[in-house]
Length: 269
Image (cartoon, rainbow, N blue to C red; front, side):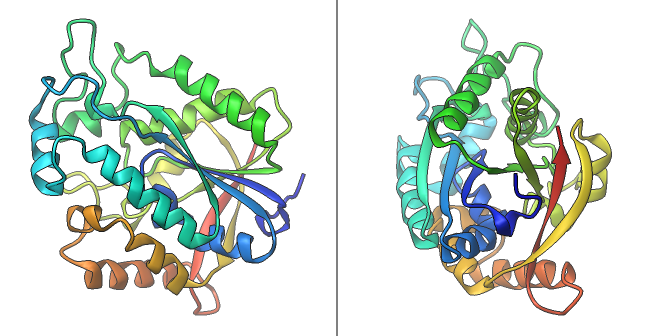
């Protein structure tokens, strides 16, 4: 198995939500496609709210912010197809429910507020069995020689369960897994009010980390893909220009040579 991601021929990039891979490692995806690799971006939580009557403060807040009508995730899936295609990769949508839509048996939202979303998995959340099966199926179908997975910087529950589930699935398989720094949480400014950091996420993770790999990338290709997620820009930054400034500053800081890099972390299973 390739010890460096740039040696990969079949790369599976796992994205909890419809934008995470582009934001965090879109440059690596574009570079690998340019190298001739077969790259699939698998986005996990892509299902519409199955019960429109189910609502919560965070659902109402996001629906107002996105202004995408009664089926916002359907619109966002279209954005994802455009973004992943712009990177030259293939896409898969996992069809699982985002944390904000997951409920208990009485249809009470498990994560009704932003604070809940960033406070770790609920003991009532039974998403792990579905996640384990999804990842096992993707690995069996695609046979990747490398996988990109979130480090779970930011503590978003969907990033946490994605990373932990893949670790479980990878334990009995000979897989090269690289953890990526979840942007924009990795800047140390998010979530607002209780920001996280890469260093804190490395201390928390159950993965065995071996060493980091800074990968030089084309930042323009990455930004072009991110801008396909037009509905999400204002949630993260005031406008596209501020996002570009923050992204370039972060990526330049990771490079020993002054170019733009994405840093990933090789794991040992």
